[in-house]
Amino acid sequence: MDHVEVVAKPEYHRPAWVVIAMTGAPTALVLIVLLTQDVRAWFFSGPNLRVAYLLLFSFGTAYLATPIAGVIAQWTGVMDYPAQRKMHQAPTPLLGGLAIYTAFAMTIFVNNLYTVELKSVAIAATLVFCIGLLDDIRPLSAWSRLGVQLLGVGIMIGYGVRVSFMPPSWWGDTLEVVFTVIWVIGITNAINLIDGLDGLASGSVMINAAFFSLIAVQTSQPYMRFLSIALAGSCLGFLPYNLRPRRPASIFLGDGGSNFIGFTIAALGVLGDWGTNSSVDLITPILILGVPIFDMTLTTILRIKDGRVRSLSQWLHCTGKDHFHHRLVEIGLSPRLAVFTIFLISVTLGISAAVLRRAEGIDALLLLGQAILMFSMIGYFMVFVKQQYRL
Image 1 (cartoon, rainbow, N blue to C red):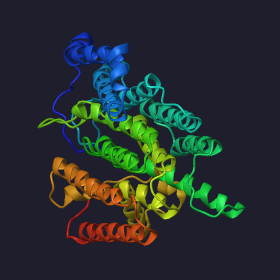
Image 2 (spheres, one colour; image 1 turned 45 degrees about the vertical axis):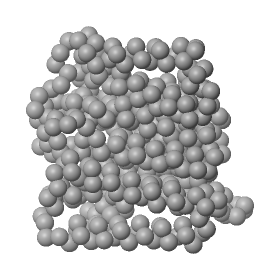
Image 3 (cartoon, rainbow, N blue to C red; image 1 turned 135 degrees about the vertical axis):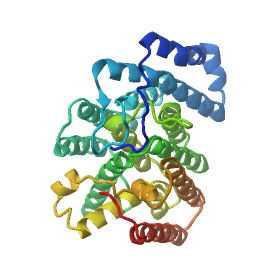
């Protein structure tokens, strides 16, 4: 995705050992301490301490791995080079997703967070990450990426990971499978599409995962809490390099990273038992992930209206600077302010989802309606304000 922040000079111009030593030596020491038996035993003595352990470990691993990934990207030439459609002015590493993937996978492995369902999600997410990584190295067709994403969803469904909100019947099962496919594919690509400003995609997923973790506490799902906090910590460890004060990003997620975190957060929405009835289970993840859903929906509707999208193939290949974050910048917000505005909206929606713990079906529908009205007003304001959008 295009990034609006301007990069003044390459960040990874120092020798590799200097970069790693400067940013990683203290973090590596902390990780070694966290891996010692006595420290692990103390942290694992209670669920809250274990959550703190997972957050520290995932954050530290991502924070250590990100500059290493940047050096690898420079050595191998996996860089995002300046071009006419791009705003950064110097080559920028594209392997930030490798750091997040490594941190999340190591956190799951070291802490023995295994179930059959998670194994299916892990395999599927790995496939999606790999195809995204290959796309960063050598651009692939949109159909190739979509095919692997569908394969990943199929693996999940084969192991029973799917939404459940219909009566048990052949047609109910079919609708649940179709909804699961649309949900996971849609969220995965929506996260990829919002990766257009420094820190936006990784920061948004961090907030989303944090609210999934909060609601997992409310609904007594310690396992989901652990998974969500591991993803949040992995994204948080990457953010200091991707969302830096007064400086542009020194490394980007790349398609591998945005597809991986998008697929994983979508899978968490399917895995969790988020409420007391099926409508709450369905609406809670919709609220938490409201921003990428809104962006995908608004962009698709307007592209169809403008005649730029008339088929699935055109939808897959259509690009432009008409996404939520682009429109916020066009109406006068700075890129940094646009990012924090979207963060604030995500937090607001997460709070709405958190109050659904003991809600009845009508309460959930009212909160969903409130979110729809809010986004409708935002969309109307952005689209009909007299601005010239560069598409």
